[in-house]
Length: 174
Ligand code: CUA
Image 1 (cartoon, rainbow, N blue to C red):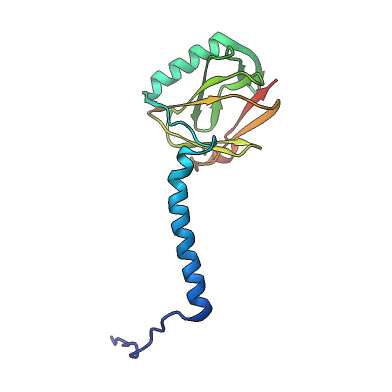
Image 2 (cartoon, protein in one colour):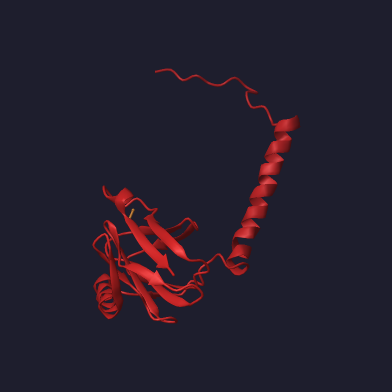
């Protein structure tokens, strides 16, 4: 075995345009480091972070009660549930579906409880591109007010196994 010892003086310090780009990248890193906590408080794009601990079985029980109390239709074999305006809505993520589908009214406010029954899933509401982590053990509450009518698709954006790409849900807003 032989070791090749690098020649002395192989390292060349950045200079000219290279130095400028490294400087710009560094400054931008600093700006983003400040903006990340800033955006946590500023703007309406973030969840308020309301969350509770919940056992998956208990969350499923609440979801079942919710489904029994307000089923108004069926989407691909999944019940469509309409919560009362101002009320609670439950959405359970599991391999590989979102349960149930929801029907909401434009301009009304709801408390949407999100949790997973098995492992980490990702709630991604399209075409709005709103994204939240969905974790087993955590009841993450989002206060939501739909501002437009239509059909919204929930896709899972955390890889969760063979059926990940088929994990599609629906929110209908009237
Ligand atoms: Cu659930 Cu990917």
